[in-house]
Length: 402
Image (cartoon, rainbow, N blue to C red; front, side):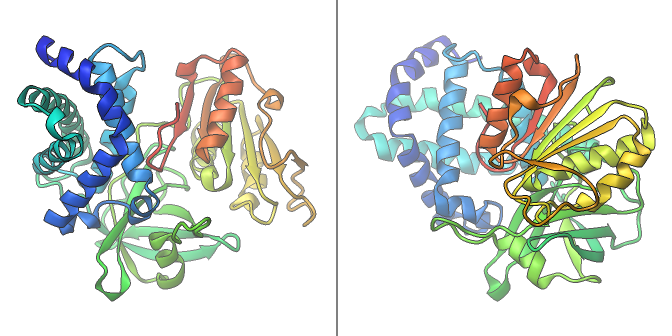
């Protein structure tokens, strides 16, 4: 809990911090990377280039301060869990938090100048360390459960046994532990981090990919979409590397599975709603249920550009045979390429219309796709009476779904 004296100071200075939030976080990243260039190997350079990272950090710091001072009703437990899982998948350690805190608070002082008195600096330092301590504790528990050593060495070598083109822009990678050890289990909806060394000695980059195969199999599968830069954004460094430079027989560094979101939820009807490459956790969920709960009522709703762009679509007929209570509904922007595998699709401007989604009473809902897509669908489901706690969703970028 924030001390009474600090709460008053933070409440008074919060508008100024909020107004200059992106300037503060932009200066923070510049300072930190100048002093610790090795940390560039952890942070997503694409999000740094577009400014998404600094905007997300600024919003998170302000929102957490509002939470501590009673100015926000947003439950922070789930948000902290999401951040902790992401940090654990990157191998973040407790020793890195003082570095972040030092440069973040120095950036506040540099941007706000004389307004940052000793009392103001102390109050915001308290905010930061309350957040840091909560995350450190959560991450320590995650590392313990995952069997990660105390030094935070999350990486294990995995061998690519098969590389399978799914569409023009999507490829699946089948992986096994390079040392021949057991394949860890996971929950549908969880992801792994993949760390790659960039060509030309440009350092390391890390990205998260949902596990798209069946839990309990003798291998893992990730299904990766090539990220093509638009509107000045860079192409995806890691997705491009995986598509262009990785072949069967190569090894990759992977983290254990992390992610607080389950794609299968509790018992009862299940609704899986996805768009684009967001289908990967839904496919893991279907494969899992086909092996464990084949009679469970499941509805899968998916939106994509075309049938040809719909990755893993060829697996759906087999899953429907094994899941007699599975209903599949597809929306495509363009069906001119013809229907594939006999599955029908509708044209709906590339978006699932929330009012048309089949909805069983008491269904657990899982969403995965672009944030605007999920926000629209989630809002429609809330208006139809689905309780917030029954709607799970996954966000891979720096944004948080409100």
